[in-house]
Amino acid sequence: MPKRVFFLDTSTIVHRYVTPKEDACSKLIRRRIDRLFTDAAEHPNSIVLQIPNICMAECAGAFARLCFEERIYGSGEKAKLAFWSLREALLKDVKTSRLVHSYELKRLHFIDIEDIFVRDHELAAPRGEKHLSSHDALILSMANEYRLAHSADRTKIVTDDRRIADFCRSAGDAFPEAVRISTQNPL
Image (tube, rainbow, N blue to C red):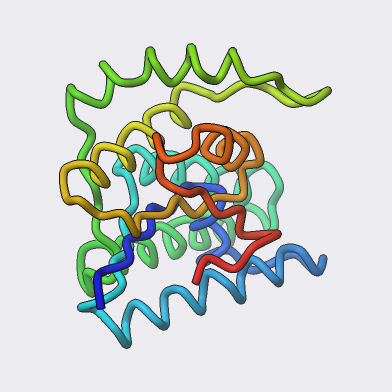
């Protein structure tokens, strides 16, 4: 069976580490991301999880916001301990267990984003929705470069960002499929 490669963006991977909110959507995302990690651990030769290395920094920022601004784990020392615990859990999956592979940003990815921004602005944005951010464009560029370099037609971007999913859907075969984890199971 050919490998299935999943590029995880920050909007998805944070749910792996942060205690889910009580709402049904957060719990659903957590179940789906946990299932993806379990399947990758059980089938390392057929499922590969990639995280663009820029998402590592975005995750740290999300952890900081949740711990220090939203105080979901308390304040003061509790918040600091929670932040470092979340960060260590992510690093364990990337560095120690190597369950998730960090995909390096390359100069080539910056060249590709101009085409992504042009295409994104040609795509009408629904009311109240923003166009792709620079990080989003880089994630798309990185996943697409991986797909093309490795002939990995089974490459998917796993996100909860509606704009990324809409962009990939509108691009046809020009970009990998993007699965919006809150509405679609990536597996």
